[in-house]
Amino acid sequence: NDSAAVSLPTMTSHQFHYMASLFLTFVTTFGLGLFVMSRARGRALHRVFGYYSLAIAGWSLMQGVLNFVPDQDQAVLLARVCHIAIILIPALFLHFTWKLLEDPSLRRLVILNYVVCAGFLMIVPLPVFIPSVSVRPYLRGDFFHGLYTDTGPLYGWHVLWFVVLASYGLLLL
Image (tube, rainbow, N blue to C red):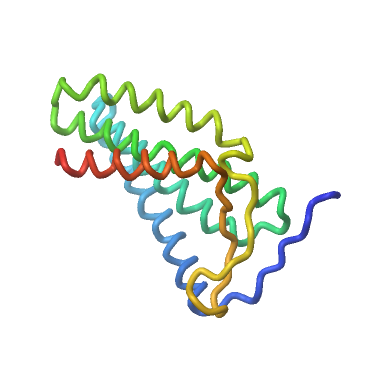
């Protein structure tokens, strides 16, 4: 096995609370997504909100699990899979906003953002997006370490798209 072992210090109380919040976010958003989707079958607004909630749940779960992955190769794979959910979040949020506001003028923008989303999904497996993960402190000082996703040169474009799209969706609301 060519995979490098990842060695994390013993979990501190700070890290426990961080991990607990990720898993609580997973449980609540997953439950909310399933509940909303089960109550309003056939309604696009509820279906899109359910998918949006499930994407957030997936992000939270995988981010929490990432700190328990035993080797570098598995950690990189999980970080990339986690980003599938992360990439879907802003596109689903704008889609939900469009359905909520019932604004036909947003239709083309929603479609365009799913195309952008597909483009980001295609580069997720590539090192230009996520080349590796590394152990670093979450906060200043060295009392709280965890695995961080190292970013490639195209990752910044994803962050910019995420912030702009989420901000625009909030502005519309």
